[in-house]
Amino acid sequence: MMAKRLLARNITIDAFVSSPAKRAKKTCRLFCSEFGVNEERIIYVENLYLASADMFFFVIKSLDDKYDNVAIFSHNPGITEFVNRLCADVRVDDMPTCSIFAAELNITNWKDIKESVNKFLFFDFPKAEN
Image (cartoon, rainbow, N blue to C red; front, side, top):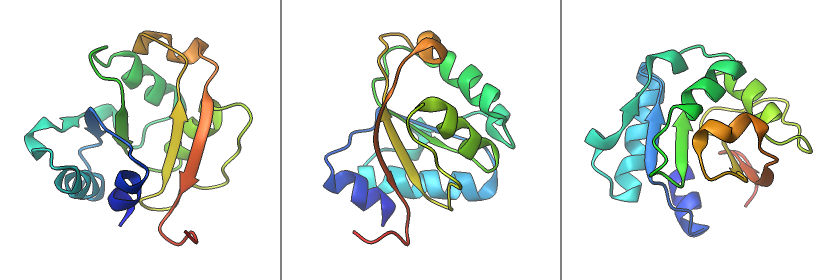
């Protein structure tokens, strides 16, 4: 359902980056299926399991600059802390299971993410009214 909502917004994803934890992997695979992407393209990052916000930034800094739109599948509490540091003008109390926080980053290289002033696009979650 959430992948379909992204597709309805004409969102594209170049890279699917996931924690290797069972639920994150399963969710990422479902998104790949909806987007018509072979799940062998998923980038599993061990450091995303129970990651702090700083670890999210570290992982993103290491992404290949060939990717323009990246989806990250991970866990709380780190992912909530991360999105709250990603866009200064938006606060999310909790990232529910399978929620989506979308932002436009004002960068050309992933390594510059921490210095970027980012634009909040939307926040969506399964129980949200659409």
